[in-house]
Length: 282
Picture 1: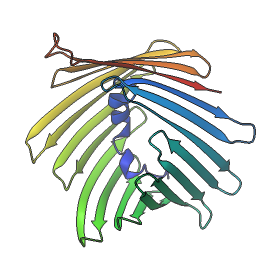
Picture 2: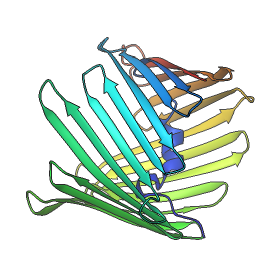
Picture 3: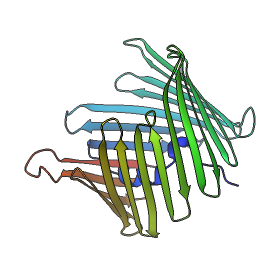
Picture 4: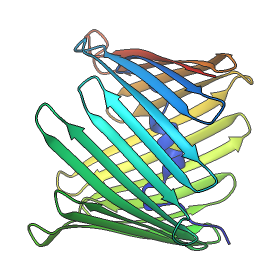
């Protein structure tokens, strides 16, 4: 029996096809390198096309596969100091512990979260505690033969109340998957599907309804693999937003991604978005 996906990944194939690889908010450059001893480094920069603001961050990651330890340190241009320590299968088989911290020295803001992830055949559970906000979140998924069902609950200890709850079901096979998610205290509903039509063509669609606003959103998209180095994506929403994306592997380790979002209801206005991302990896 296989381990089911985490709660956040129910419906992920559809979400990835409809939202990933559309760099429409500016220009992004990312460089990843890995040393011979396994130490990994990442530097990324992003310029927002609307505001012109530039942000950057750098990250180092140390991996000790023998002892199941991963240590990640990061520093952003807004002076956020981030760290993450992961312990996988140290205490018991299937259990992973994560400690995530963030510190902004200018305003003395501290964040610390502890995650516990337990996985075994037919079960995937994630529990998270915010040590400063005193909030608790737990979600769990059970699955068997492609069918998964899960629920998530968030509890605020300061206010002594359940702050949020969600539920989801999904079914997947080798070439397709469907999912239904009810989130935001069961007020937001999303139904989605993903279909790998053949080795070169994929299609996906999603419908979202908010019971609080009675607003319905529809989105459909697809991906076509042109050759071993290039592919294109497209999508359209019921609001008239048409998205395009082009992905190209220029050479091993160098990837270019172009994206655009065209507002078909306002073609003569400056409401359209374009962007690109360029990544380098050794």
